[in-house]
Image: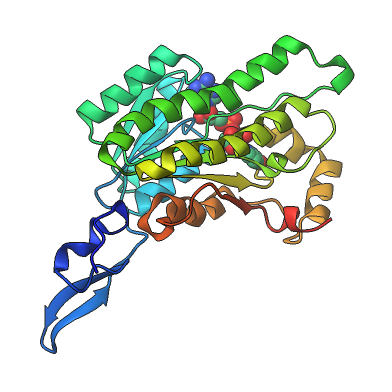
Amino acid sequence: MSVPTDSNRHADKGGRGCGIFGYRRSRGRTGNRCRMTNPFDLTGRVALVTGSSRGIGLALARALGGAGAQVVLNARSAEALDDAAATLRDEGLTVDVRAADVTDAGAVTEMIESIETAIGPLDVLVNNAGMQDRAPVLEFPVDRFRALLELNLVAPFVVAQAAARPMAARGRGKIINIGSVQSELGRPTIVPYTASKGGLNLMTRGLCADLGPKGIQINTLAPGYFATELTQALVNDEEFSAWVAARTPAGRWGRVEELGGAVVFLASDASSFVNGQTLFVDGGMTAVV
Ligand SMILES: NC(=O)c1ccc[n+]([C@@H]2O[C@H](COP(=O)([O-])OP(=O)(O)OC[C@H]3O[C@@H](n4cnc5c(N)ncnc54)[C@H](OP(=O)(O)O)[C@@H]3O)[C@@H](O)[C@H]2O)c1
């Protein structure tokens, strides 16, 4: 039976009897038969990754582009975005940029409208922009707590809301929130970060409850420890680096390209019945004590 949903909108052009996920009808010398299509293929999809001028966001954009998506890079610095876009275009990817501060709700609305009108219907949103701020809890200034929550928790809500309106009207879409091992686990000196990533994880489930019936899948991709600008101080700290290696069953920090498979999975038809879940890509850190 053919089910006309996002999960097979590309795969089900072959006719009756082949509308099973990932299959389509083809005519060959052996006659009329169903053959497997690639459910991870993102050709023709438009994907926005917030905070993607460097680090994890840039790696996620590269992976989505490599799977065929037209990627839209976002960050505050237009110059850094242009450099990142030039790098990805040199690699053969189709890239647009939108400079915007995701903590500015008006700028977010403009960004989504501009993508929808100038580039095409937004199929995938990756809420990646985020920050870290460390201080012992007894000294943590509350204004810094609020600033962190604005970027790590309120902004993903605002961007998801703006992106989900047209997605819901179309009855399809993918939203991927970038969590952390701190979506589940505490660490000293990062109470606000832990609160934000734990909150984001449950926001994924709340969004799933509201938007799942509208054909949208929302999941959390939760990285372990990856060397980026955000974690540079920890990478440079030999004692901390040794702790990461010892605490992680994989025995090392992650490489940002190792997040690519998970984001393509969550952005593609391959995850059409995966909703409200958290996928840890952490070398096993959250699986062990
Ligand atoms: N690195 C890790 O080990 C790790 C582990 C778990 C989770 N994460 C999460 O992964 C995400 C990315 O981390 P990362 O390590 O790649 O960080 P990063 O290297 O500091 O990069 C942050 C990116 O976000 C952009 N950005 C910052 N504030 C923004 C704003 N207000 N509006 C729009 N863009 C903004 C930055 O560009 P501009 O400064 O030009 O805006 C940059 O492109 C974060 O959510 C982080 O919590 C990281």
